[in-house]
View 1 (cartoon, rainbow, N blue to C red):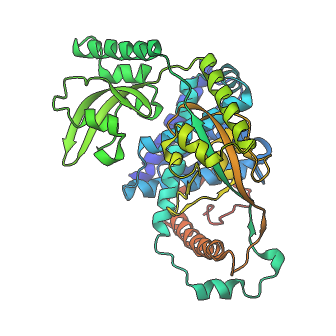
View 2 (tube, rainbow, N blue to C red; view 1 turned 45 degrees about the horizontal axis):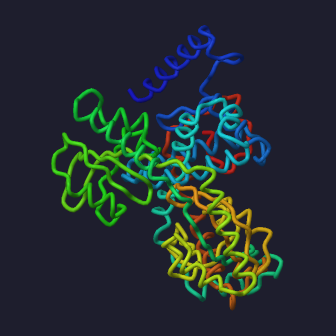
Length: 457
């Protein structure tokens, strides 16, 4: 019965493709199924879209590489669903905003990005949201498969003992930076405008004229939850901003909308959905006050003056941070930015340039050309809360790229051996899934040297 179901699906999909073509929705080629993995199809249009997105960055035949990667993704996502592995929307949103900000900077403006991608900003966000959701879910699944990998010091020494120096891992350049951040002034009139807007939304919900979810989808600036009608997952008080949590946990009536809550992200109204033990599930609408260019300019002038005082040694950078920085995460640590490794939870003050770019592309671009001890000119950046801030940075240290040694870079070499053992586990897992999963490849798409042999049966 399951076998016939696959072919009924193929027939329906083919009829849909022909109908779409007749309606002018496809300009050149009728879409077709090129791979089937389990119950999921990979379409020619999907492969073409990825080919255009990656351009010339792919190594190998894109019509072989892309469908294989999509097939692997489907194997991981299917297993993740079985094992109830998921990623909260709140984890995805920062990645989406960071990616969009980088693309806007490259394109020159939001309008140019929309023109280039031929999508509205909301569609672009939807596109990246799904992409990052799948990537993070796959990462969690891989972590679960390899969570029991352990490596001893003896294994590390044995593995690298006789390895030629030029074969040892190359440690990328790392930097340590200190930040002084100032939030441009936000006028009371703008705060009042945002609050009045949120009050209007609340009145519309309380009067029954519009649902909270509809307003959240249309107007909330928290993209991750907006696409879910403002709905957030069950969260404990400690997982939420204190200002948000105080209001949310005081609510008892799901039919009412909260008073306005202020958090580090902006201003919110909240609707209770459910309480379960010490966790709460709610909807919210986030609005951020807009910052005027003149206030950004004022903050930049102020920072320029502070930087000059530091350069003239009238005050140290650390002292300037203590009395002038608005960033509470770094202010009490002499401005030093800390890097928490997502996969291991390890905390360090060192950033590889790629990691610094992931934290803030604007910051990475400034640091890239600096000398040790240098104080930058003022610049703007988007912080982890999604707010535009002004900053100056001091390059505290730069550790140039070098070949790893067991004595100086043991942790790096240990991770390298763990990676090798993990990759073996993943390879064996993929081989087993290839053997036990229904896979069908269009005959015209089989002539490939796949990374993981075993797809064609």
